[in-house]
Image 1 (cartoon, rainbow, N blue to C red):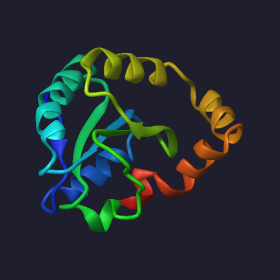
Image 2 (tube, rainbow, N blue to C red; image 1 turned 135 degrees about the vertical axis):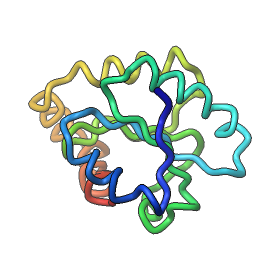
Image 3 (cartoon, rainbow, N blue to C red; image 1 turned 180 degrees about the vertical axis):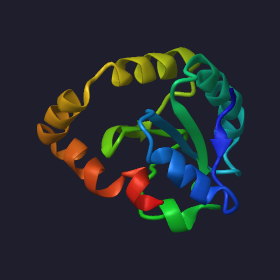
Length: 137
């Protein structure tokens, strides 16, 4: 299963899917970025390896009204979230193995463990306020 690309036509359906119980793995990229263009196939392959998770591709320029306030410093940037708990937000090496291990290890945490991790680190606490896709959509 490939990732879904967020656009104006499917925004309501994506918001409804994000309200569910699945882990969310979002890739924040830009159409002009050569690394992102190459990474898209890797991201789709990652989605196929994790069919129980919801993979979404977000072009930060096309969807600036949704993610415009996020501090995307480099590409690709991954955002991994479960319910309202942002578990990871950061630049990712464009490597399938690294991304797979990150998704796998992050999803191994329970919500209680994520709450503890998020409360123990100022950066993670900030993610909860500014990076929650459910809130942004």
